[in-house]
Image (cartoon, rainbow, N blue to C red; front, side, top):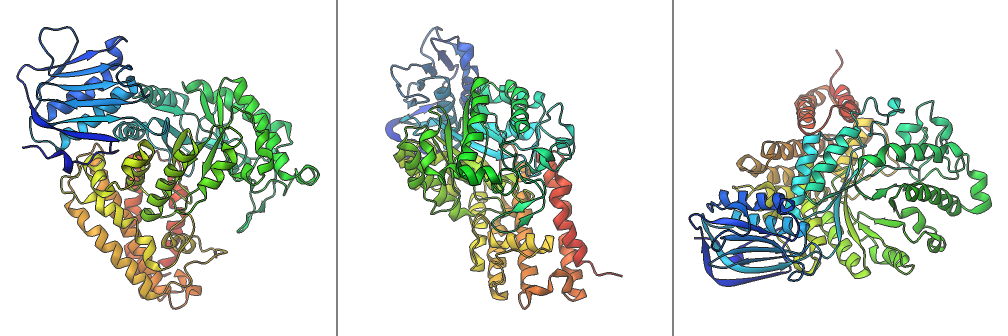
Length: 630
């Protein structure tokens, strides 16, 4: 017998689900009819998804155009009069028929995805009767994946991400880019990065477009251009060619374009001319965040005369003009302009601020208000909290994502973009991002229905598809290892801050690991080991099933290694790894060496080789420091 509807978990949970009396059972010779004012071929994708799920669950219903004799066992229909909300759908299961009624093609995909989730939990050849009415809170709901901090996914991996987005009812994908697009005349910038090519983008754009996902071009156009500006040809365009002062350390390399240099906007215009034609999207994210060096170099006099905010805004407007001239709407990160609220009214009416913040207590409501009162369209941009962590920061991520959705909906945000960064070598595996992807997708689809969603169970059933039911809970608990040291660090796990510090052999300005005692490290190691123990029992059925448990196992093992290293150094952190006794170093090296090999193997299973050497270099340096000299 099928599960009762009250026990079902859907992802996202729909805003309305009403159980009905009766059961729909498989009908011999049944078929799925497609009814649409558009050519029925437009619904081939969602119809195929629905029929494949039905067949797998024992309903041998093949798709066919409407108009055959008799009543179809299932019906997929576009009917905006019955479903007035964009991307909305109704799913009605009666003893006689399964009906999927959608406002538009996107709604048809969502209806088919929900039917597939119901079928996963139903008995063979039987579905309880019910009614679902559903539509999204946010018109735009997406993921932004960093492909510039070493990891550039293979095209196959990106196709898989798009398929997951269909499952989660997401409709926008951005690939954060600094230097990882293969611009024809700028080979020295990307030649070691295995970049996305124009052909890659065209293929991914088509794959996403078929699934009603908008692939939005993303290229930082102001700051975060160190991978460009370090080269002799581009260094003269830098704001601070000889380095500048971050808030936390001195950086000897250039970082941002000099806004007053005519060559800077010319470079941006050239990027736009080559990049944008590969995307069908009419939006563009130009970045422009964290311009830390502005005013510390060539624009110092201009910033003194007109204030840094004015200098920033003038260059932002030049980029916006170039984007608009090419027929796109420009998004930009809103952090810098928020420091100069008096300038917000001067922003063009068609520019879209992206309001980002990654901590549980981020002041979203206050920042949204600064843009909302001017009438600007804006998006809320929380994060997965996976970067600088290895296994994530689950509690922080969930609180941050739900807060962004709640306050964004209240303030009228037009979009929700879940950002997934790769700072400091992108050590975390993709599987660690799946739980926060699911949380963000659920929260942005319907805030009210998903605030109390059982995330581990939902991710188990519909993302990992783990028959053993262990991966979701393991992912959730491993993501809270960061709390067990008793230390804290904004935007990172203190465990991984410590590992990176030891690997780079650099003293951080804020040594959050200093108060961590040997007992703290022991507690974190024990928590991690207990959370990872069930991974051996996992039986995932997802398309990337072969990688899921190994990726979590590897990330957990690196955390445990770090806790062991921390325990050994807790008596005196100034010793650094090279100062440990030879027998201790030998033991730690024996643990780390195979972990490095596994990190390399898992990287190449999803990502291109470019960036791998840079990412692994700190860990290889740590291994060298641990190996006793002859």
